[in-house]
Length: 115
Image 1 (tube, rainbow, N blue to C red):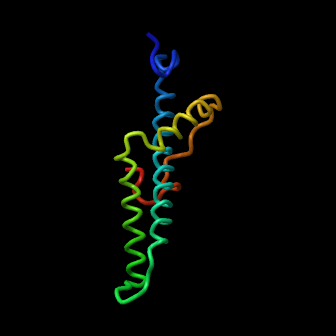
Image 2 (cartoon, rainbow, N blue to C red; image 1 turned 180 degrees about the vertical axis):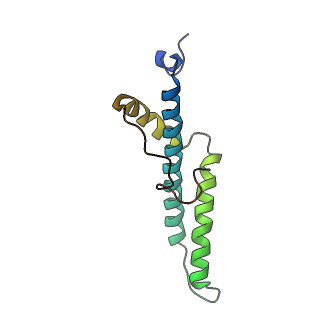
Image 3 (cartoon, rainbow, N blue to C red; image 1 turned 90 degrees about the vertical axis):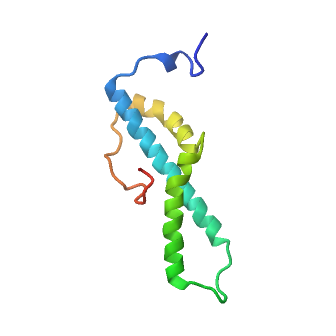
């Protein structure tokens, strides 16, 4: 019986390829967090503001930070999230290209998505 991923799915992977895959998976998760954060930001912009209970700039800053925190946590609860699709799409291209992934940094998502 053939594995779901095909014959290449059961092929042995060396340590360097496994390290690249781990970095690519982390970057994919960060990109998913950026997407979720933008989604929350767009949803938050549809809520009417003003009125008697308007919090002003303090409330805006708090809700922005709260959205970042929730965006960092949300993808971890998804069973089949966007990061898995991103990882699968980029995995073969990164392996074929042979170039290293970007260095470890928080340039993509300075919040907390890469926890």
